[in-house]
Image (cartoon, rainbow, N blue to C red; front, side, top):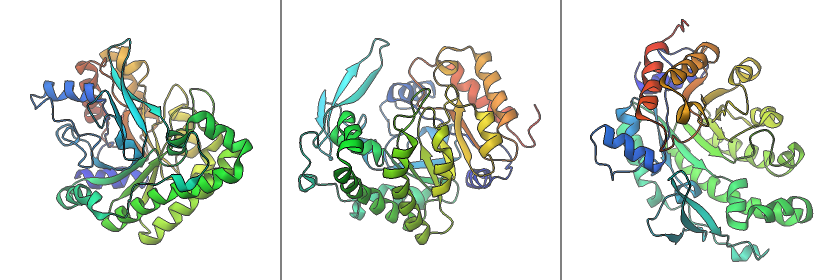
Length: 360
């Protein structure tokens, strides 16, 4: 099978020739892999609209064209910068030697006046030139995913601050409903353009899970977010009835799993195995959802041995891959501490043992 056939077969809950692969990297880890491969170490573009170089050379089965708030991470080299949403960012050095960007200024933190909020124009077709180029150049060979993550809940607190949005859910409900309706317009517009351009999957995401519980109650999720996702997906299915929807939420999300299925989510990402057991998810929701991720990125990938990586990858293949419905990869960005040996062990194990029928 070519990459696109493999990807589409798996997310339609059928068995392709092998399990599809996807891996994300932090900029430092991406640079490390490019250097290992003998490529230009400054050519970092995994989180740009063109999807980057590594997915092609490492045998990934779909490409992501990234747009929206998620592209503000790592977007400028200056120590502090302001993105197009008006959010102020700064670079931070961690004790482990990693460099990350974090938000330090939220433009809606001190006002409830929605007239003060001007959103970027996602009807502007010039934003999608690189996305169109990806579709035109690679859309026959690879699955194409429109990455519109940090969609609604995350964008709300990016612009306003987490404490403020959590307070709004209880004390300022009328404002929050109006605020979320306004924020919904960016992904409505971006999703409309991408659906018409022919992407196979629209990927949105809002982190609702912590390590072992939700950030908000299921009732608040159902009040503020579920109806808006439902309207968005219904609108996009009206443009392309065959389009699929992926949803990113880290951590523990058991209480809202059925809600995500109800609104039409087809693919769940990243399936963090220290928060939710992938085998249990497969048993309970495997007929409705494809699971994307599932390899432990908290311990196994950064601190485990090559044998640990091989064993966990084989375990996911044994327990989650049968019947399709699995896109295998680490459960978030590969960190700089992850050895090249562990990264390659993952890729090699999937390619050796991930062929259907699974025999482990």
